Length: 424
Image (tube, rainbow, N blue to C red; front, side):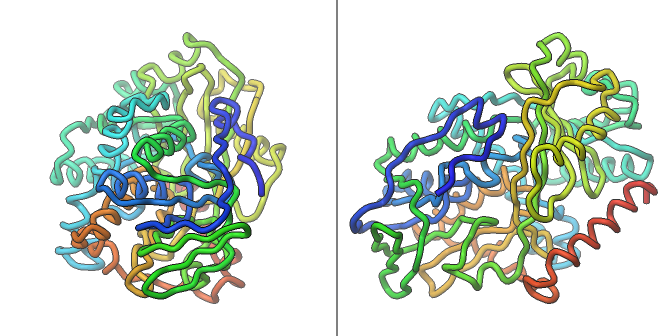
């Protein structure tokens, strides 16, 4: 099987080296996927005293969990006012009660298990035009209503203390946001699972799942017999449970990281060391790293791209935001898939009562995956109420199935790109 994708994160953190599954194991819960969904599930279940076995087809953090922008962004890809309007006030209120919890879980795990993942508190949303600024004003009111009192609206002058760019008319800072080196976080969570007695196996792709009162999960060299199976493979789920891939589409984002700029130059660009994302539909996001590089991402990927393509696509965005970096050397460029759902809300549910799945975070995975693992652990230990808040949300099929997913989604991306350019 493959190794970690060549990225700044892999360069900075290295990779894990857990064994392949061989032979047969019996356990309470088998977890499929070594990204944040699987890691959070395994960690919370192990904390609850359950015996867990985690299977990863590649290396810990191979998928989006080890390739994303590293930003702790609160709420969901659709905010709770939309959820309430579309699915009822009760659903909106229940989702709102959990909208800041994912970030808090991350901070608690970092502290509890002393995970060195370059955590820095603070983030900001930035507006390209007056309409986007109105959106941020409404977002502040909404999020304050549901308990986040660490939000500050910023006019153009105040925003200069966070980001040195002339592209924006203002912004909104969030003290409950922040940024991390996500692959280091994933690796630290894996070590925490082991410290609690959990077993982790890498390069062990699942070839077959036999359903029944006991779930039998097979790999090429071994098998696991479990009371429960938790599926957290997300965009990298293969053929073994095809019903979970019919309603969503893997698509991706692309990231570049500069050469080392030095601390002084990084603070000229981002004085507060916050992470930043803009309010476009196809948004850009960026931050500086612990070794003083600029990491910049954005766009949408349909199919693979080579590093040269990625740099050609993202460099103009970086240089438009920070003209002083024109011509800067790019040391790393990579892509990674996330799973997009038609509703842009995550899909949680059960198959056969003892197979649980969580997927489709639609770009808000860093925080929501950690929440997903916690509520799944609650459900498997007898408290299913919060899991069922998600599970009751409708799971909508994508028009035309897999064959038409890419052209329809690409058409939608072109539409939203036009809206961004027109400022509507």
